[in-house]
Image 1 (tube, rainbow, N blue to C red):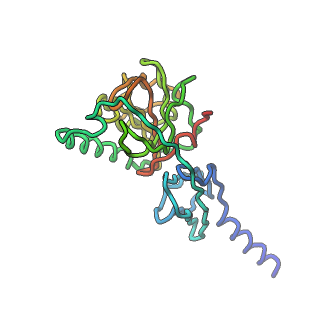
Image 2 (cartoon, one colour):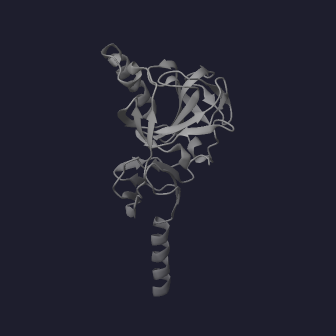
Image 3 (cartoon, one colour):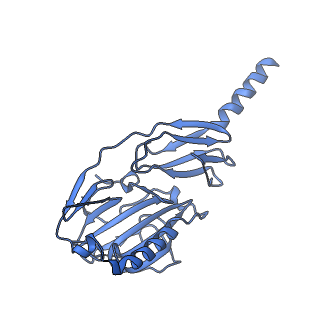
Length: 261
C-alpha cells in the first residue's frame, strides 16, 4: 500500500510539471508551450490563455534582463534568459521630417500609434499561432535585422524591431500565418501601407511600407494568401518589406519563427 501511495504521489507531481517549450530562451524569442489540457498558466505575473489541447504562448523582449517565471498549476519553473549582441545600422538619405517629424504631424503620429497599440492588444481565442510560420517573400534579400540600433541621418533612434526584406516594387507578399486582419491602413506616417493580423492569444504580425493592400479589416486570411505588394511608403529609402512579430506589446524577433538564413 505504501509503494502504491508513493507512486501515485510521483505521478501527480510529474503531471503538474508536464510541460514542453518550443523556442530558445533568449532575448527577442517567441516561445510556444504545451501543458496538460485544463492547466492554468501564468508567465511572470500575467495569466495567459491555454488552448483546449494545452498550448500557450509568450515572448521575451529585446532587452529583457531577468529570468522568466512560468507558473503551472501553482508550480513554478524558472528559465534563464540569455542576452544577445545587436548590430548598429546606419541609414542615410531620409527626408529630415521622417527622422525628426515637424510639430504639425505629432497628433497624427500619436493617433496612428494608438491604432497600432489597440491592434496589438487584442487577446482573442484564435489558435492560429500554433502553426509554423512561412516566409512572406520568396528569394528576398535581408537588409535589416531585429534589434539593430538604428542611426538615421547620423542621429541615434529606436532599435529596429523587425526584419527588412529588399524586393522589387510590386512583388507579391504572402500571409505568414492564418489570421484576422485587425488593421489595414494605406498611409501611416512612419510605416506607410500597413497591415496587422491577429493570430490569437496576443500574437500579431505586421507588414509595413506596402504599395498595395489587398485585404480588408475583419477579413480572415489563410497562410500563403497574397495580401499585398512590396512598396516604399512611409519612412523608407527604397522598395522593401518590414515585418514585425508581437506578443501583446512585447516586440519579438520574426527570425525566431521563420526559416531564414
